[in-house]
Length: 66
Image 1 (spheres, helix red, strand yellow):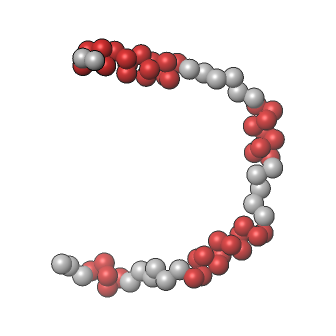
Image 2 (cartoon, helix red, strand yellow):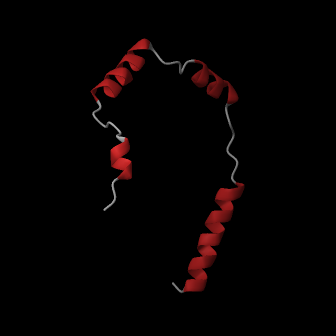
């Protein structure tokens, strides 16, 4: 396929994607967002991760040059 046909095909696909508007189920979206609260277990998991991280930042590391 030549470059002209290839570019036309890509343009057609891009245009279809740009103007495509799927039907949105707002009731389902509202239910999903309303029930997506974080539990205490999730917070504890991230707290453990932050506590075990040894990526400490030193100002000396910033001032060193190669």
